[in-house]
Amino acid sequence: MDGHVYGALGQPGVGFFMAIVIGALAGWLAERFTAANMGLIANIVMGILGGLLGNYLAHKFHIPIFGFWRNLISATLGAILIITIYRAVARRRY
Image (tube, rainbow, N blue to C red):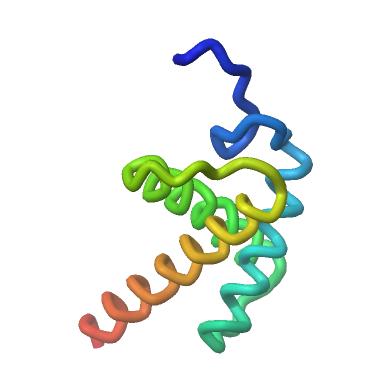
């Protein structure tokens, strides 16, 4: 690595508990933006997966993501992208 200590979601300063909080908020926001109907656990999972995807995409485009608000925005956008892709794949199946 580059000598920095990384916490959850690969971000400095974000520990495990904060990753759960950011994941829950990001999942809830993504649920509202996409008009999905998910529960609390699904919101947390979508938010954490969205955080990982958002972090990966931000890293690829050289966008610095750190702190609560930037993590929340990247996780929300990642969760929205995951929900949109899931809906497109699920719609194609049926």
